[in-house]
Image 1 (tube, one colour):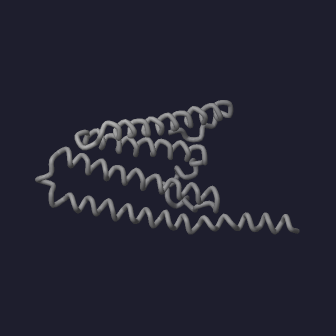
Image 2 (cartoon, helix red, strand yellow):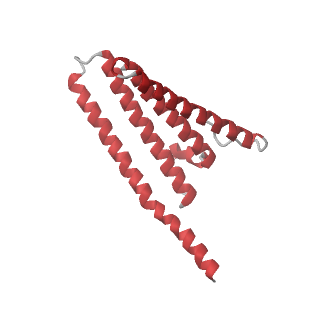
Image 3 (spheres, one colour):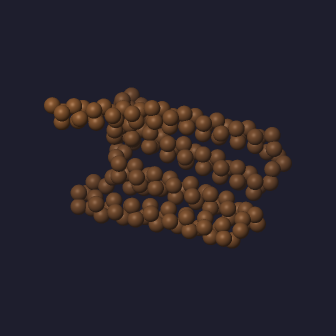
Length: 171
């Protein structure tokens, strides 16, 4: 009886995650607002802005898009993993969701973090005159840490799924 009540309570506790997913949805909205704020801020200056500054703005917008995509992946796959199945059958573009498991999500998150880190590192390289060598070295070390971590996760996933012949989605 006690064990059954404990199991039922633990199973019901998964619904505590639902408000967190709503919070991720609000974060997605905040990122969309920030994206358009940056874009609208750029438009009046488009004819006067230097090419390098335009590239930096473009990289910032790409960064926002990558983070937004990461939020969507985590939100959908986590909901499916912990709460319940999403009804995506009527949304043909959401077929990828059925193929996204915990292993492939980890790899996709790692790849997104590497991409985001790459953008930040590229921005730093484009502003070399305003960044100290020590700070730049730390940017490179942190980026390489993300790259090595993602590579090792991919190798571990490959090894774990090599025998079963069912890779978890790859990068």
